[in-house]
Length: 176
Image 1: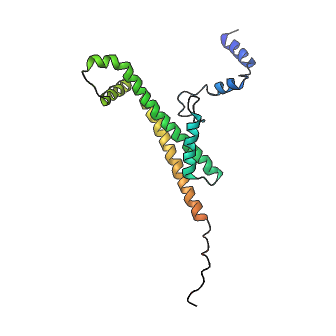
Image 2: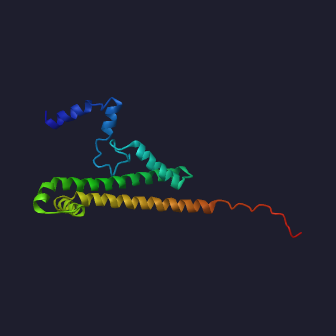
Image 3: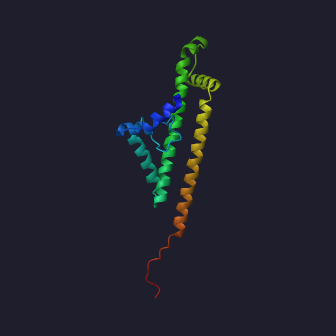
């Protein structure tokens, strides 16, 4: 029996995780950076902060229909993921600067914070595509955010135009 046949037979016996914790862990298996995730919040992120973010969007847009509410949830999730991408970018550059610190101290007499950021950014872009990939994800998220925001605004205007105009109140004729 070949290795792949044995793996197939053993895989057929598996029923997956049995505990709720195991199932939750298994559901996160494919999550790498969380920028394309369906669940907008990573396990390490603060649920309360996410709920506050969502509430800000609900308060601002005040969805009147189920569809509007879903779109508002999408907007809040996209905003959350954009914020995550910004935090990832800052962390990547910080880590690069930390990694280069001994070399920077040897090479430069005095470097301010902007100079350190520039060195970290240049080093990271020279040796990796991670910032280019992150930028591509951010651009995609911004486009989705803007598209949904515009759709919500159009829907809101259509709803306002379709509402019946209230009759003016009866005002007694004072000229008579």
